[in-house]
Image (tube, rainbow, N blue to C red):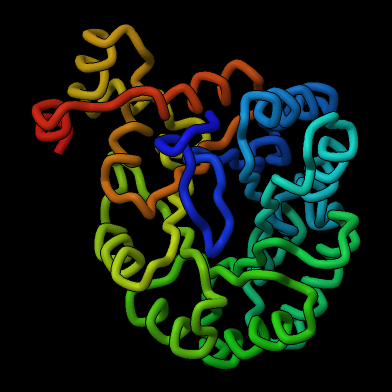
Length: 289
């Protein structure tokens, strides 16, 4: 994956054009054993993936927060390659509740505490990319962004990102953080295209756009073939998987787009990253919409 066509930019960092979303390795009811997760992470790294996305809230339960971050840290500790070339992006601002629920906490004090926990879980002194996970309607967005600014000033994080943000929030965050805001992570896939305006704002401001659930989400990747026939038809013609066609379509949307497909098996992430070698024609892109 290491050539000019297969890398993209987050801030001043060049990363693989397709990253790895590590969340599926920590989802209760779906997660593999730790050995398989480590094999998946190492396979991605060996294949040239240099962007791994995680979060403190990616955990099988509320009493195991940081589970996914610790998995990523363990894999990096075992890898024989250049760990310094890998950008680990984590997130804070979502909480886990008993019974498998999710909550939000955008208070600056909470985000700073969450960052400290992530530093410990990842075993680093400074986080490469720290993203606010989801807006908290109980806290003014500018206050939460102020916490990211404080973390940047303190050197605890090197770059800041936001997630699940609308165009107004992106512009507000950019106004507060300036060029230290480098990315936006929103849902985007053939079944969820309403983030098109956010992609355009990112292109305008020079921010990376990281689509989460780029293949439709956990347990829904099969819908790509069932509900979006053109992806399967083109995949059959090209002799590749519909997932590769989907990711190639997203890469073609804008040079700021860096998909982060989730995976819990080596075979899955290796198939996904092969999409960087699939260049779709104008006619094919028109068919995909």
